[in-house]
Length: 84
Image 1 (spheres, rainbow, N blue to C red):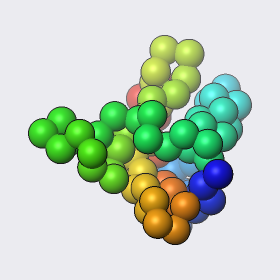
Image 2: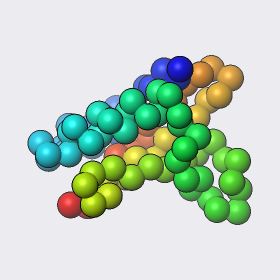
Image 3: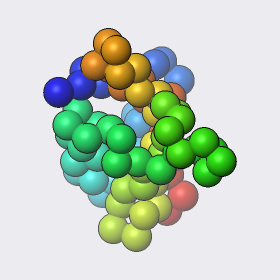
Image 4: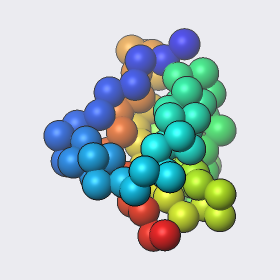
C-alpha cells in the first residue's frame, strides 16, 4: 500500500470541488493507495514515468496529477482539476 500525501496547492483545489465530486475523488484516492501505476503517464513518450494522471467523476470531469515515489511507497498529489 502507498501513503497518499497532498500538497497545500492541491488541497486548496480539493477544497473547491463541488459536493458531487467528493465521493468520486475519495474513490480515486483509494485507488492511489493500492494501484497508483494504473494512471496514464503525463508524457506518452515515457510510459514508465512517475508523474501520472487519472480522471474521476461520472463523466471524467476531474483529473488528478500525481507523483509516485515507489521507493518510499508514497504518492504525492500535485494537482486536482474539475472541469464539470
